[in-house]
Length: 391
Image 1 (cartoon, rainbow, N blue to C red):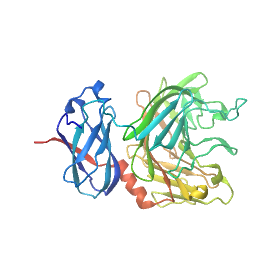
Image 2 (spheres, rainbow, N blue to C red; image 1 turned 45 degrees about the horizontal axis):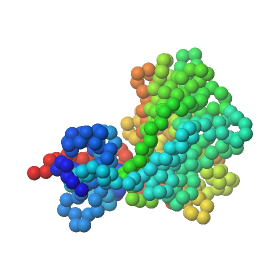
Image 3 (cartoon, helix red, strand yellow; image 1 turned 180 degrees about the horizontal axis):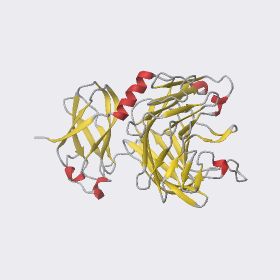
Image 4 (cartoon, rainbow, N blue to C red; image 1 turned 90 degrees about the horizontal axis):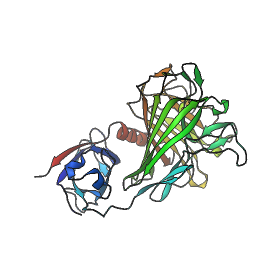
């Protein structure tokens, strides 16, 4: 490994204890003597100073800087210093996280060779031999827990429009158009896929997807999703999801509603009468009393066959409008959503896109409040990095 430029990264943990935490640092390629064309064929490696027999830490260029996972434990109020080394070329490391695209159908993301999630950018049909009003594109299913079991459900008979993990609005009014992108069976809203770009790497794999949200023959919102799954060395699957909705011609008024936004439907077994479920929010609410409350995070878990328990923890970013948002937790269906329109309508004005950020944690086991708080701190206030030239 050749050090093209001698650059130190001083990582500060801040006010929180850290464990295998994703970190991003803004960096110009010129700082390490590279052009954009050269960066794609190089391996970026961090070597910790003062650490006995420390394993090299891979970093990955994301177009704006470097991304890496701060390894092991880093106590609050401490710093760690790494030297950045860049390969001389032709030595790019094999990916630890991958995004495999099946054109016109889906992109499947894996970490360490194990599946994490599938995003269906193509239309998924309810029936193999005939169209259905529930056919749709633009949603996530399956999501796999680290144990290999699936935690999401699709086409459940009681609400066939509930589709794994998805994002949609119930009331979206643009001028005379009154769209509903949630209950797609009404025929007042559909998702039309336009573009997909995916990539793999040593630190993360991910993709961006562009969709048109169409009512009648008119696109009223343009949607962009950014998804990033980290190759973190733990029994958790960390996935960042950013959603951007941009009004086209008219402002779009999202009507007040107790559900909508980001939705989750659990695997079919979780909907059976007497199914064992365990739900917890950041405010200590459970499935019995979480509905119509606000939550910084919500963890929804159930039994995964012979593999024990597992589920999905959804963490909101503090930059989200009206943070923390309200949650809808259904009393009998394995369903929840987090939405900013529980208290009142929200207007997406032309030229002022709505951006919402989430960290999805797919995990084994039941809810763990201490773990969720640590992961929420990692997302809301990650470690900071100072760049310094070595003497």
